[in-house]
Image 1 (cartoon, one colour):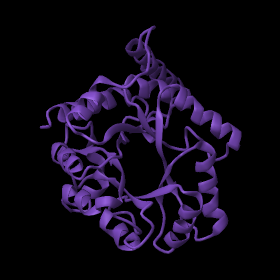
Image 2 (tube, helix red, strand yellow; image 1 turned 30 degrees about the horizontal axis):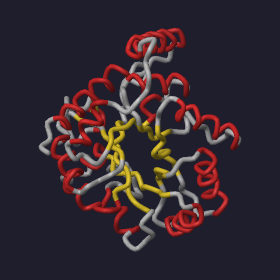
Image 3 (spheres, one colour; image 1 turned 120 degrees about the horizontal axis):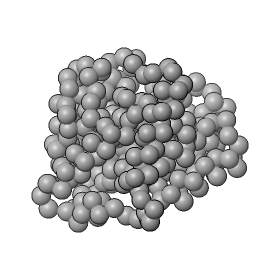
Image 4 (cartoon, helix red, strand yellow; image 1 turned 120 degrees about the vertical axis):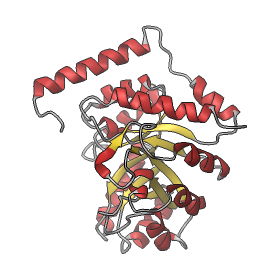
Length: 289
């Protein structure tokens, strides 16, 4: 359970940021990472990134520093770090803060777009345009997807439906979304959350393969028990077939981002996130050319 003691939260944040500073060092320059370059040299077309929801307890500046500590270059930004309430000028400035730190915003979300109303849907697309977000990760309904597709065409901003497992009455798994979007604009696709997908009881590697060209984003997590939402752990400690997933993504020539969504230990996520990245980079390093 997350601590509700403000002094405890401040202590944890200070400790985490101290670790960030030690990792970065005084002469740190944010460039393309050796691990990423090595993966590219081995023919891996996708990149590893961070879903900033993992850092939801931290300010934008602190989250940026922590993502840098992970040596990541790609980020899917949650509204905690680019608030919906900000003005267009504030959103542009916030996006610039990520870019100045060497971070590429690849998507934004998750965004609950549930109303089948123009004003409701337009708000999210205006938000993305102001922040320079090229793709919205969304939780819509089947009923409002035609309306969302219309805005995709108008704004030239992609959308990726995020599945949320058995509890999601709209899109539990990727296949449920594919049925709705199969004839839609190619800029309408999926953000496959591998943890939630596994909990629907399907083979997660097959589910990724079935997504095909509609796969626009991936949220990575691990579970000790693939049917138990509460068993999330650092990537590599659980039962998620990470190596098989990465091999499948490579075979598919998936050129998007695999974004770590580390939902546990919200007050002190950096150790588990570092462990997760070390494991994922190890898997990539061991992949055959």
